[in-house]
Length: 140
Image (cartoon, rainbow, N blue to C red; front, top):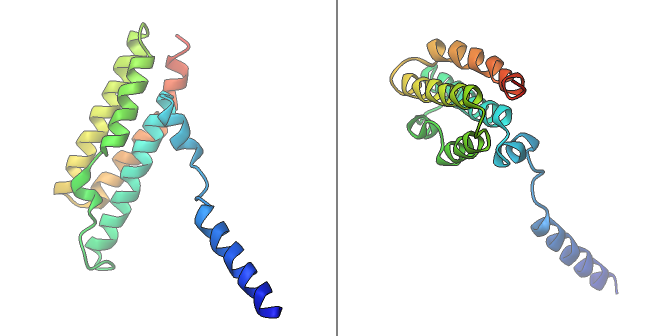
């Protein structure tokens, strides 16, 4: 009887562990919906994380070069930018501002690929702070 209880408990635990998904990232959800602030912040956060990984690699804390360096801005994040730009139809200033940030992030990704992370991280941090302006621009 005791072994049956343990078998049931183990089976229930296995089912629960398989069905549980990691919590959804609220920023990713907003970006997926085309929110320009979230799109900018998500892509900048991702590039910043990559830059920190490269920094560790440059210091010898990691043995392999992080793969994210070659990816730059992910295709998924580019798709989020495309959706956000489309959602801003009729708001030319907002569209151009978001496109400009997309170009700046792409440029930072290139700089990260060819130069030291220490030089790129401040540029990414500055852009991360500027992402919030998209909320104000959309009101104009």
